[in-house]
Image (cartoon, rainbow, N blue to C red; front, top):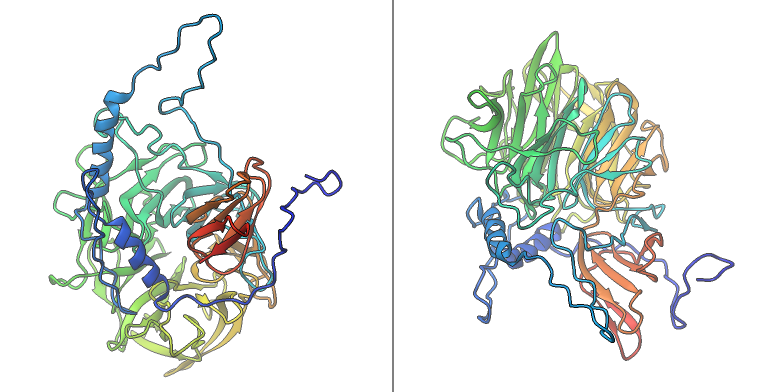
Length: 573
């Protein structure tokens, strides 16, 4: 490290990073990436010494409903149980050498669980990330909830657990570090395992009780990282909180090994929650004298598979209304999460894929639906219903490139689809999707005009200062001037969402949620590391032992990383 600059010295042959052009997702996009991941992840276990064959995974066509793992629902949980049973006999007290003259000191042995033998080195943030202003980035953020006042925020990461900020995103704390701390702890008994998944697809809380946080584990957007079911804490503002994994009702399919799209909690009943999962709509219900479980509900009333991709809630005059949308349509409503009825006439029936719905928290009378096409996952349209007249209107003027800038290539409406209504103006909506040609996030503010028989919108692009691939758009309660966005580059906020230009600020400092797919180490300089991440480029670090040295993005997305010893360079593919 040079004394003058206070930065780590770099190898003599190091070349400074050059500006890069954005590279679009490879053909197949997140779906192809997920297919390759699942092919390896679902490979059957075989005894040591026998060649392992990869499990066949059928690629999903654009717009096709997500399929679940072909493995049993409790497959991952059973593997953990088996591992603990094998490890328990091996946990013996370390044998120390007898002392004697001339004997060398024995190396320090690793401490048995739950002692910590690892030192975190980041990335706590990645500088110069993807986006028009090269913002600081972290990993894919799938869910955000904000408590009243705007300072207390929880976020859920695709494969990094739940994090909390007490200062409006200035700093973050991980809330799931204690999950499965001891791999030899039995999964039954007085202290069963809390969870063995850090994948988050949905979060929910109620303004009156922000300590209670509901987590839907497993990310529904991509159906690559599966979860262990719904998880809840009643002390989210403590570090670490106490988490409880809740089960499905006896007559409902298990929620282990599946994924969540959304959660909606009744503001008037903190224990009443509705979930949109790959296995259908579930409602949280009391089980006997103690505890809760989750019961599946049918919307269509037949035996066809239902994949709800969105659920929201609104209250007015003391009454609660839930809205849920199925993959392929239509949209349903319920006053209790148990009985559901299709709403409105005129909702599209042809070429309908994933749907996101949105309402104002205190206005159940106007519902919006953002619909992706089933044939190519580009935009089908945005639709609105005013429940007083009972008819869906298609809103003309939707940005056609919302789910991808290349109409001749598959879009990403099955993966990154978000919609929100401004809390102070029912005729203003926000749409989130994939990326622009510059590599920034596809995010639009749209002013809606409604007449007796038609509706139109005027879209304004506002996503230049955020990363691509938008998964969540959230407002702070009772605050139309503070908007939060979760995307593949982490968390961003704006205190002027009605403005133009670079109105967002990155809130990723200390948010260690990158999906690190591969790691490469220099063959002779052991403190020089390169990491390959999902959609956040190749990250590089010159002094791995110095935890405060930041990582920088090499741009684009990255896979395997290695050094060529012959030329002392790296190659990222």
